[in-house]
Image (cartoon, rainbow over all chains, first blue to last red; front, side, top):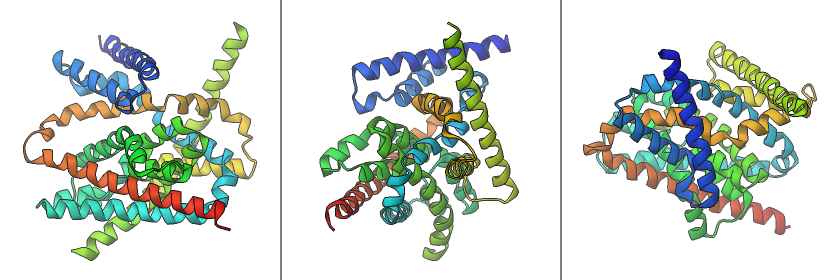
Length: 228
Length: 126
């Protein structure tokens, strides 16, 4: 029974992905990205049939196990674009630092202005970096790691969905601008979107997500201590 | 048929190699309490391996492409976890959603404009 459930949810996830990926190719609107459509449909299905997340994840974990190796695989576009990265190393470092500081400070300021407590403030500053780092920063600074997961997800999916409109609005079409915006604001989910734009955007986005994770994990706790 | 099978074998073996880098990265992360996740450490290790030509690019190219082509799928099991926190989206916490989005737009917009400006300056400025 357990095995059957496991295989069932694994199969359903892959099936939905195949269907929604095809649909996204037919209707390439930013809000149709498969990670969003699959998640929404799965949550609705699981809730309406009263299936727990643990039951679902017994199947889902087989897909999740590939996420780590996939992040490792980002070394492939990075290596292929090594000449580009070397050429723009100063620009990359400058934009990484800018993205990290903006994420921390704007999150901090908006949460303070809206009257949220220290726990939320400590959690929100690291929302633009990858989940394990955001959770770590949250727990180090007295935040709430469970909330960190939600914030990271909103920043990731929200950024991947609205990024194309924002770029159009601001006239951003350069590979370094687009790649770093996705990697620095929307971490790995943004990088998945950057892969749609091309190898150069993906390489910049990958280096952006790794360096911003490093930057925020160091700067986040320091800035938080410094401002309070 | 056999070449097709061969192709999947190669992809699978390459993903196993990538998994190895991920495990080593995780081990280094916990052993030295590094501030970045094990997967990112593994990525940097692989990058170093490729640079130093210890790992030929052919050993990972097919497996990497296969995983990266379907990267969105790999996030789904984790993002579905949001179902455990649906009460978050009612009441006082709800206001945090536009805050996170707005802050994310600030990062994206300014970083994007700066990146574009710096890259253009480099290409045409001199």
